[in-house]
Length: 149
Length: 97
Image (tube, rainbow over all chains, first blue to last red; front, side):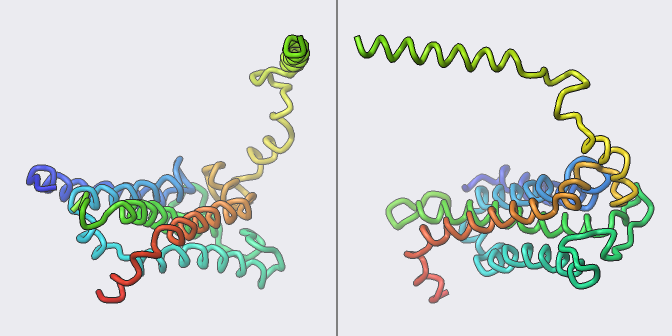
């Protein structure tokens, strides 16, 4: 898309969208929201980047390799936190029994393993949204129909 | 003739189903089956047991963490399925780059 206004507005807006996504993920155990909604926000901002600046530019920012790392990394972190509980107290994915510090309820650093799980889910959901979008529009593009450039 | 008979049969079955809906408890009453001791347990103990003020997060990530693990695996599988179908042609380009 060769539109200067859309490009400059997108450049200004994307950091705020991503900041709000990170805010929602990190406050998942205090306020409504969490990994799924915050991850969707971050993924949507990257989809906006692809729509405005084109697929080749967006591929440099979020390549297939990075998507592979984020996809499997989210699940590995999740299962790893579950295995901590399995080794310490013999129960998979347990919070209080595994000795995670619960903190003062209502503070940002509280809730034991819940914020860690929310971060893992957030990374996973954000990368899933962008990867699916890239894969789907990639299948549509060829030499005769360049589509989004 | 056979068609009319079938229609009448289906109408009767439909009537039975609608009657069973009337017999169901309404959602808004206090003694509805969905408001049972599980809800009370979460409201009373969630903050002490998980340290999370948000009950939804406490249920999602702590009490039913295994369910959420399944959800993330569903997302993972969806990406793998789409990639395995759509990405076969594009592999040569990436090796060059």
